[in-house]
Amino acid sequence: METTPTPTLTLYCCNICKTKPDQLSHHKAHLTTQKHIFRKKCFETCINTSFMLNRELIVKRITGEDKTRIDQFEKDTGLKFIKGDRGSHDAIRDWTFACIGLLNDEFPGNIIPLIMNFDTEDNYKNSVNRMIDINETLTVRNEEPETVNNDEIKNIVQNIENYDYDFFVNMALKTPEAYVFALIMYKQNYQTIYLKHIERNIIHQKSNRPMRFKDKAWAYKDINNNGDSNEIASNLRKTISTSVSDIFTQKIEESPSEYHELSVIIHKLRTTMFKNDIMRKLEHLFRL
Image (cartoon, rainbow, N blue to C red; front, side):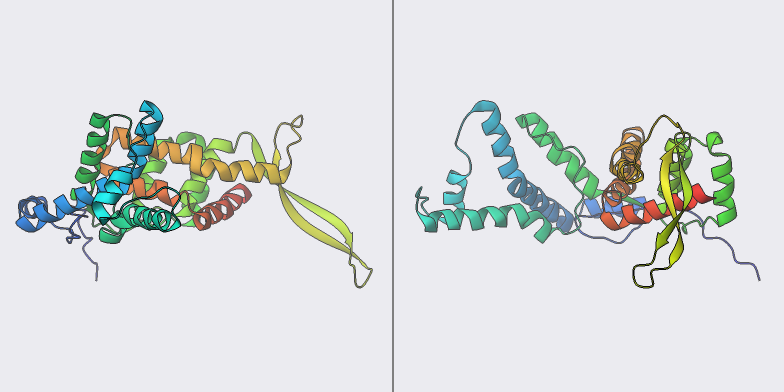
């Protein structure tokens, strides 16, 4: 019996109030409720409190003024700050950490824009408003993740020049798995490097008998470039959070409606475990 595929729908939810994904009309109705209006105001207050210190440090650097956070500390706590007094310094330190962590404590999972500009009053307000707008309306697609088998991946690798980066961005939005980003790296590097197989004859330390040891190493296709395999691997790994991530950052400017999905991908590309997985998949692609 054949099953009818689930239609792909775009749903909307509020990350401030943690609503469940729903159709646009229901989401818009939520935005007018007193509950949301109150939570939105609390969210804005937490943003200003958590980012206040960063903002003041930048203002101090630009203007040279040293008003900093002492007045706010005294207003919030009712304590008098005494320079050189250990108790005062401990208190303002604890207050500082509490301010910085307030946003994540009260609104866990909040999304911070990639660029927050604090250099002027207007830029600061615009950054805060942008952060509120992003968290107020998130888009969610209810489609099932697509899977790609090894034959399909092999076909892409063999015809890599026929695929542009937009193809891989769309693939990543549907299936943000490590092999998709490894395909991007393969496209970026297949003309300059390869994974060569090497065999070494070694002497086993305990038995003192010769053994053949098989290994693999990265190498440049240009014979005049004697780059070390570890150096190539290190440079490849760095590109995950630079040139690969930049592709998705650029896409945000072209498709602001997909900001949430793209920002999640960009964050994922910075994590150590995901980078390790991508590097393993990249080696596999170069062996196809």
